[in-house]
Image 1 (tube, one colour):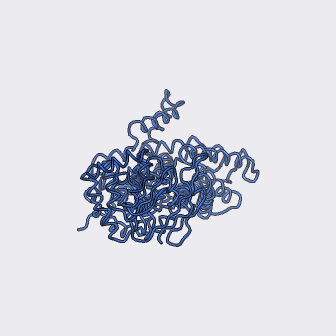
Image 2: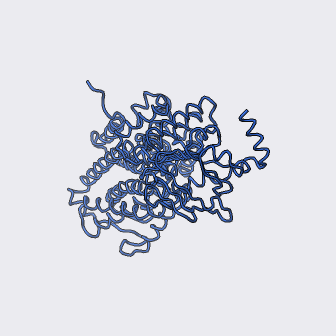
Image 3: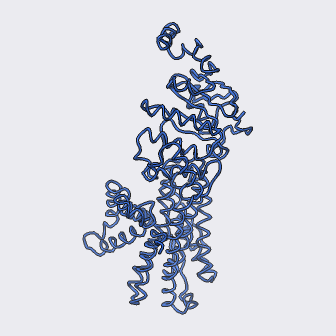
Length: 250
Length: 322
């Protein structure tokens, strides 16, 4: 198991954003994390990589308890992530952004080697020709790729992707899907939060579903999409949902 | 023939050394004194730039390191009869250690809170020194004239201090350049742009910030010793002058925060402006107000400063100016 999340709970005052979530993630899989808006998906990511400590529960990464340790420790151990709302280092060039990932990630490379890795990764995600531009000058799709490049440059074992497809057009989505598949080919384990259902269903080996902070379903994409509770969480009315699904299939 | 390596460094160094040796060529003492002020500003502004420009933390009370280093160095020279070199070492080290200790606490604060805390530290230090009789309390300390004899008389001593400040300035610029070009500097700039994102990428921000703060404190500590040795006396009001601290921020912003050349240009320009204002009957009393207004204009219209503005203008300039 590369990641074990055990009874993780996160409360903000009276609000329980994540409630007693437990799951295991074997190496090499893509795990889809879905749920309606406000279900606590990003909060769960934040608990895993240490943006804030969980109120209760444990996060074990590669056999090491990383519960509540700062984000840079997680990064050093090989856990990288992207942000739902992109956070480019605006006044630095695209290349510098990626070099930061390589310099301070798992391998802690020196500048020269990091630059070589950055070149390779920028090529891989398709932003190489933008290397000398300032990160602030990229468009949204490119910024999402930049997020990904930075995370990959760290040579992570586990990659958390937070809605990397949101805001992209159809062509961009399909090219991003190819990129994600390629990342998996390289042996990186992935957890992805995604709202675009066909994308997450086609990519994921397994899916877990959060609703109001609780894990309500877990299984293969097929199992999950048939689960009445999941359908209800998304659409409110199971009968309407079933009907909609039928139409989708037709 | 290879292209000149590190043009950004050489341009800055040639400028500083070229201007720095002029007083020696014409032997003018008054020119030497005004050049001393400029070089001192260059070194202080370049140091401040490491924490302000590279790391993005506005250290408002940065002059505290100048004051603490100056005080301890001056004590060693005037009361213990030390030579100036070990005193400079004491000045630099004490400022660095102070920054290290403060780093663990005040660097947890961000934005305006950090800026306010640094002002508080400067004022607290001033108050502390005023209450230490050993350091002369509110009246400060004086140095016996005979101290200069060790260096061949006052004339030689003043020239020696001048060369000292030129060397320290050059070293500061070299350090500033290599910090900017290093992995460490890249981490600092990542912190400046987005500290949380930098940490997610693995930058150990608390450690990096602390070392940046230490580095930016050492040179002001050394400069403090040189300045007060030249002065012959030290008082709390001179050592912890918040006004000078604010002027340093203007210099860095004017030339371009986060660039190597910027603080050099900014200090030169600002000191020239200051001289002009101080000698003008209209402006001499509102010289600081003009500095404040200038800072406002810079932040509103050219937040990148002169060098930053030039760098943004053309790719060629970006290659030669750092």
